[in-house]
Amino acid sequence: MSKPGATSDDTRERVGPRSGGGAAQDGPSNGSLVLDARDVSKSFHQGPVILEVLRGAALSVAAAERVAIIGASGSGKTTLLQILGGLDQPTRGQVLVDGRDIHRLTEKERGELRNRAIGFVYQFHHLLPEFSALENVAMPLLVRRAPVPEARKAARELLERVGLGQRLDHRPHQLSGGERQRAAVARALVTQPKIVLADEPTGNLDGANAESVFGLMLELNRERGTSLVVVTHDTRLADRMERVYEIEKGRLSERLMPSLRRDEPYTGT
Image 1 (cartoon, rainbow, N blue to C red):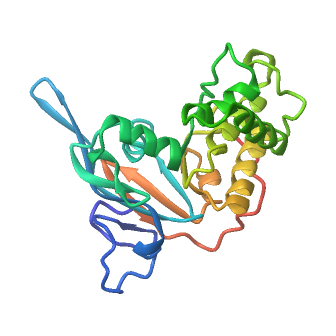
Image 2: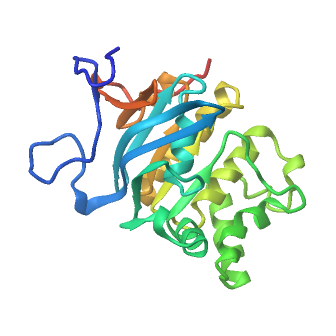
Image 3: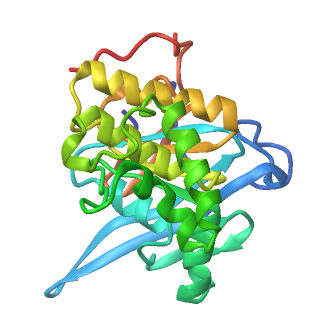
């Protein structure tokens, strides 16, 4: 593993945005970017000590691209994902989502951009317990004031697509862990976002359910062209993505990947 700033056969550090000069050939051109994070840093004060969680992270994601972010527990993966989604503010840096600087928007504008362009999937499903699967999945469309029949129709179609057509009226406690996570994936995709940010989406699932949920995300990525940024601790899962980044000591580095058989099923731990 390379130290920050070093280059090896296995890892190269991304310390800034790709230039427009044509030298960088390892990623998408700026015209196709859904997400473009530049020089993102985050620090916290712990008494007299300044804790640097992120140091100049840069990440560009094109339409329909699949990217994984790996790293040890506490390395800053979730902090970075929250900043990319506008849920947390960076100490320094810029995050463009669909061409707009998400951290320069008002809270209302930021919420509207998230609702339109970003889907979130978490390790815990965060379904609302008092609502059915259909109502949970329709919720993002109702938030943007879509007509109720239209929102319910879109939610029903997507739940059927993820294999929950017979569970429409079931509340979360009536669903299995895998079913709840599939409903959460459907909720993230119902608005047809440009990009889905997923934080350990299979972390609480056994091998079979993990494969089902992750396979579903990849399938919908191919069908709908939705970009994926997936935070995970599991390198076998990450290796099925197109690009893999690693966070170490606050630095985000892109790993040079060997030829991988990305269609192999993920079997869990």
